[in-house]
Image (tube, rainbow, N blue to C red; front, side, top):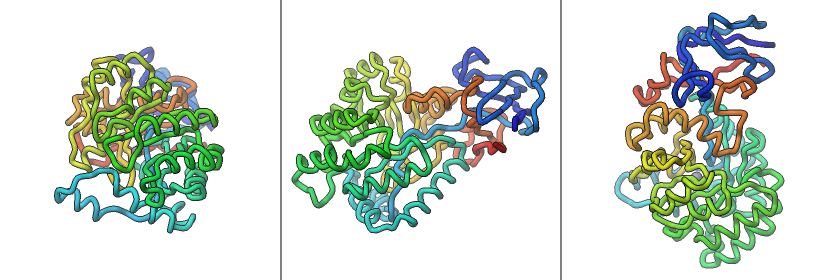
Length: 387
Ligand SMILES: [Zn+2]
């Protein structure tokens, strides 16, 4: 059944052939959805007929947000750790072990219920695509189970067995990397599209450049595409390794040298910024302006996880990126849609040209500008249309 979405006060297409500016804006627009894809887009006065009509009453419509970095399969919570951090204790990645213990203890049904609740929470805030990482199992069986559950809700699943070294391998990093690149990868690769690593020599719990390279190269040899957690807690080799290996994305990018920025500008690796983490850990924000001015493709994602950012809200990230990171409202919206689609190497989402997936977000507001202008107000939701 085709649907004519009309009454769109402002439509962000992210296609500069359809409208002006980086968001390809149209006013008084309409859009026809057929078979789950955009079949027509243009001025409302020229809209073709369709089987049914959905009038959004002058609201703004934009491509559904693409949350290209989350950790949604976990047990327990770390509210007490958050309170301690806000009382002055620093974050070094060590709290992940608490979530690993709670996740291993949780049954499949409990993990699935939490996961599905969080995906619904994302959709209710306008996100229509979600990437989900493993990384709180850290055993062959628990990593495999995490990815199997994640696959029930998304095709964008990421094997992150190299999240941290689990407590039972403390002091035996090489042995753990052998497990990750051997039996764990073999069990997980059938359920994953991506391989990832927490490359962070500044953390005593994460992985240095050599270990990270070993994990990523093994994942790639098993048919997975590469993404990297890098340069979150301090300068390090993560960004350069990501670019060298042709990673789709390197995520965090909080501490960058000029060499890192040059490498990103010369390659095609997206810099994914996760400002909810800096907000929730009270750390300095990444410098998005510097990356954009250098010509780097920037994405925004939530990093939704129980430790360093338990928020599923891309609108919050957009507001933070504008207020704290030097992005314009249009740049931030583009980063949370087209930029994040590029971070997943997807051409069917993040824009609304004919042929794109009909993943739409609608705002209870007349313009995309309100996402940053009205922080904390629940304006965005995924637009649900009949199939
Ligand atoms: Zn993460």
